[in-house]
Image 1 (spheres, helix red, strand yellow):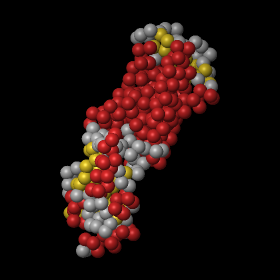
Image 2 (cartoon, one colour; image 1 turned 60 degrees about the vertical axis):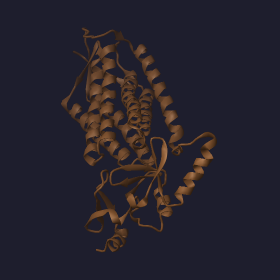
Image 3 (spheres, rainbow, N blue to C red; image 1 turned 90 degrees about the horizontal axis):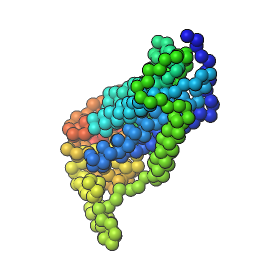
Image 4 (cartoon, rainbow, N blue to C red; image 1 turned 180 degrees about the vertical axis):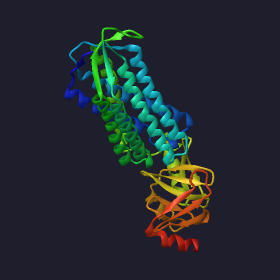
Length: 370
């Protein structure tokens, strides 16, 4: 079998990178703030995010394959091609379920990243196996490099994007994810040779490059639309709605203001603005422009920023241990002094410990009487 020479169209290579970036941004931004939504709504957005990320992985691969220039005519098996798209969506969906329904730790971030990394590889090699009249021949080194790049970069993307759900981290995570999908494809191609074969092993009907181009253009168009819709609200996210609307909205706002002056902490739940007494709150943690409020049994979403929470609740029981944390010393169950900082422990369901920065260490120890 003669090894075929091949090259790539630079414009389609660039287009494949842009598709991967758009898919990454859409999927990662759609899943932002899910903890404040109902379980049903979370599942719907996870499905949409999985379709965006998984569909983007598939689209990026076949945009790049459209740019693959071989001296022979070849086709794709439609069934195997479809299966490769479904595998990518399913694998990403599993990873997102882990990230949003399991306790988010370093281990779960690594697990989700590895799952998606292996999913990208599975999609790539399954998609390559759809080629007819042309066979891809792989080397162990090429497979090993592609596997390493895929898992490491995907873990990095999810660690950044989900470590702290800020706009900056989502953008950086998008860049890493897009580059991960892009580099895995071309790292795998670099370790691949192509040979012409006379036989066909199709499972379903064959599709030509022209037909594939139509499908890829349509999926890329949908991704562009989703990307634009996600970008509209990304830089200026809407504030949580009040329960009242229409003629009674001003009355509801006045009621919120009145209660807020009594030093109650507002939070959003099931489409309503509710309030919790500060004495029941153990920790307030920054989450982008908003905060999460931790009681003994619940984690609640609050529209205040960490700076606004500190201002509104002062003077009061809360002290700042870190730029992202306010704690109620009455709820501290333990304290550990580290080399030049510390950790406060809590007996809460959703948060067990809070870091204490070096600059706040003296204040925290004095407040705790140690």
